[in-house]
Image 1: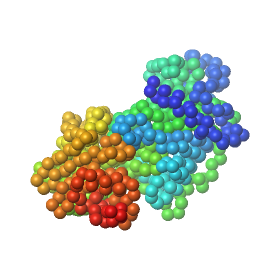
Image 2: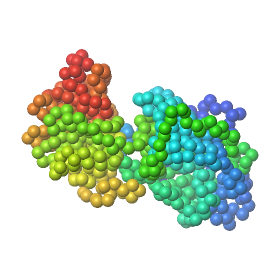
Image 3: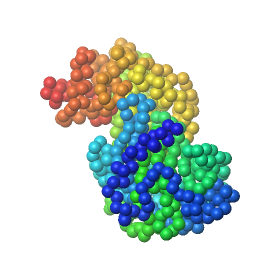
Length: 543
């Protein structure tokens, strides 16, 4: 019911999304209405629909087996809205809007080639992005990231997630797989959906079974349900809802004009198809990589992309791609026993204490945390990781927490985020089992009070954690490590140190916090960016 209410609320965006579309250019007829508009009479082969098997009904619902067998290519024009989960102000809160997009899909199904030309909006800026996939290789043209150079080789997890998303948004591809190998599908009983009886058709998939909900009366596929992995939430539901099935061209096939996708019960995609062409002639040049492209196939990453499809697609839409993994740890000792751990887009701080090592920030995913754990074991043999501090709940900054908790580290969390992370630490993780799933331990939690602070004591390097009043995340904290030569502050997102660059409003916020707390600081290290001498930092601020 939560998802259905969200879908109804999103109807207000429909006119905005389809504005400016020429009816003459559209293959889909009429305006999507959030209703399954086909009648029984409109569905080919429906005369004996009531005695057909669920698969036979589904085939009839999309236009018949013969028409589906003849589907070798697709061209789709669409517009939509994207949302992202666990990047908002409230931990465990609703998905936050990324922005609108337009999309042109060229899918050479027979040749296993795919091209998506996007106009994406995020952070109030428009970006042109093309994803080109040929077999098991891919390339990205255009401004994929909000900040960074354009054009790049596509990692295998990215193309695998993009290809899987198109499979979920176009269930005809799943039905074609069943026709090629009927043994992968079984009937799964019946359920009510929106007051109508739906047959369940369960289809084998490399990550988790795909369950198709097939309207018993019309044969239309109303919903797809499956499971995927998420670096933070672990096993999550993924659901796709198909509305306003309409005939396309003269080939006899039907396609949904309105589609929603949900991630762990939160709507993260709405797409309106304004034009679809069946079996268009697609120029082979569409799928050629530019000169100098050198994409490499990585089987493990391709599996990762299949398993984390929706997570990867959310961040790609946001303009902060989470493609690939980051196992390279580069340690910069910025003060005796205090190390800035870089080597990728997201950084951590390691603090040596008498009884063990404190890690500030466990970003990204288990791969990054495993690399940090290996670095600690190599450089501080026999010393355990006693604590891991979360700067805030955003997935890209906390997705590796579970692995460090599995090592026995106590999680230091702002009190506002404790209920959310308690659920995270207890979450099922069967699709991609991590260390906490393979060897479950009860998570130990130290709380940072909203009106106080938390201290992890030590004779040489006591660590102090302070809540911050800001608008980025309700649970954001500042981490301070005392040192005899001047302390070190670690901060994520609110300010990314860059020597010589204007610290901006975020830098001023951090400066004011340091001043009000009376901290003696020599260096600021970032969860992004670099480190900066505090004297230079103040000079850049004009202090």
